[in-house]
Length: 98
Image (cartoon, rainbow, N blue to C red; front, top):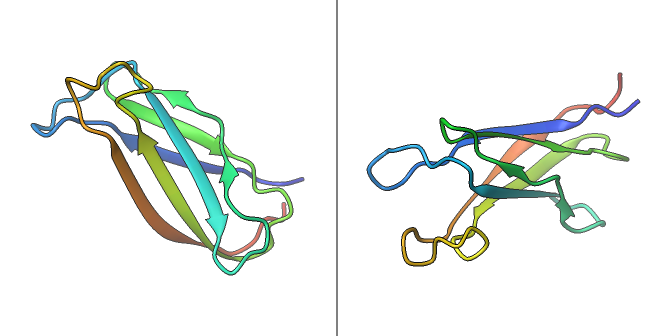
């Protein structure tokens, strides 16, 4: 049975105020992997601007995952209010066994 990767975070504006009810997207790609980027389930931020997105790790054994979290002002009808934001980081994946 595969264990998912859960990406958590908080969406804030430039003043540090939480942004609620906004769509956030996550995808990941195994560094040196052959499969390319994998899209995770999207999530909407809660009243405190927090999100928790589950990503399946099917067929992943170990290595580094490059994770990308994206907020699109266009997807959220916020183009005149907020700028798009993408954050990318790498995490070690040690095992995907039970």
